[in-house]
Amino acid sequence: MRRSLRIKRSSESLHGQIDRRSSTLAGMSTINLPQPFISRMQTLLGEEVGAFVASYAFPSTAGLRVNTGKIPADAFRQLVQWELDPIPWSPAGFRILGEDRPGRHPFHAAGLYYLQEPSAMAVAEALDVQPGDLVLDLAASPGGKATHIASLLRGTGTLIANEIIGSRIKPLGENLERWGVPNTILLNEEPGRLADRLGPVFDRVLLDAPCSGEGMFRKSPIAIREWSPEHVAGSADRQAKILVEAARLVRPGGHLLYSTCTFAPEENEQQIARFLDLHPEWELVRIPLRPGFTPARHDWSGSDHPLERAVRIWPHVAHGEGHFLALLRRSGGNDLEVSDVVSERDTNKPVSPVLAAWIRFVEETLNPEAFPVNFTNRSQLVEQKEMLFLAPNESPALHGLRLVRPGLPLGEAKPGRFEPSHALALALRSDEVREVLDLSVAEAKRFLQGEQLRSSGSPGWLLVNVEGFALGWGKRSGDVVKNHYPKGLRRNPE
Image (cartoon, rainbow, N blue to C red; front, side, top):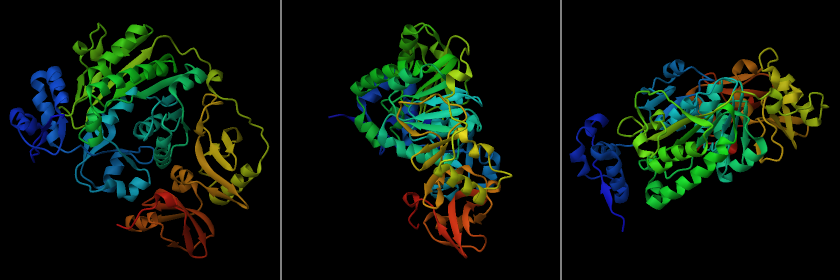
């Protein structure tokens, strides 16, 4: 039977508890750490293991990252008036200190923020995404890092969010919809098939690798139950194979960010050292040390590579569950032409019934002086049966791949009308729509429950807002506004 160590909870501050290492090790807790894991960390950390174990006496850190494409971080803080503590490695990230159930607030439904564990916010920042980049998030669900990348692109370039496991596609799609970014493509593919089909075209690739999940122990009892030395070894084997495929997708001069939420050197320093041994055309790029970061451990790698250029986030050093980050650069320059990357689209295609329905909707519902011009650019409008999507301006040719969404879902053509998508509503600003109904927070909560609204005005589609930020669609007839908030997202009364 696996022995476990129980850790005492306390009302002291994190750092105060860390200073009292020995007393914490003898205490009691609801978190049961496997004894083989404790022994392993004792070997790795030595005297530091007391502080490491003591950190598990505290609950996991709640964090949020502001959607800066919708609202600046400072303006968000003024809007919500919550007790938020800035995260030093993410300008838009904060620890949540006082707000209860932030996931139930209408501002979350409006996509003003993403609830994310603080150390996970370091990943996209370390990838150093630049506006205009072509970026691949290879294992993107549930979407925390993908939405972060989308924010860093600032409405330019293209993000391909790929998820290998089909059952994880739905939450990824919902989170991307809520974020309101049009320049994102959603795929469901194996890394090897992507590499075979696309080749080295991406400026930046993120591999948030599947791992043994040691950094999830404080949040997931399942991660504790599933942990074993064999699980660590199996994870390392899988990571090595995926890392090779991810590298095949990076253009010369491009970057690959490898990350895990685990502490095992086999899945971190040793993984990167082995990759560099086999791929001399790659180099390790130094990630700047932010407050709370510590250099990766060169002495754990068994190699001569400068592993200290990678970083670790430890739960006893920073407010977060823990992460490992390594930024790799492929040698060579950008020798790809745009024609090598951009898929061909027909700019002169005829107006189909779906396009005709969309054009009528645009003329009747959107404000022609404000809405984005590319919403009617035929070269970017992609039909899938009766559905219409707005594809990014630039993307690789994706023929033959399992394409879930070629871009922003605009809606569906139905007999005599065009039904706009929820994703379109969340991608629009108030000034881009002719008719807007702005609700208070209390009214918005009732809208999210599916309640019908009353408002006089012109008949037809209107954008329903909360405090100026889009929540979804309504359709007015007389003084009644039918609620078109998706039934699958509606909430039960609190």
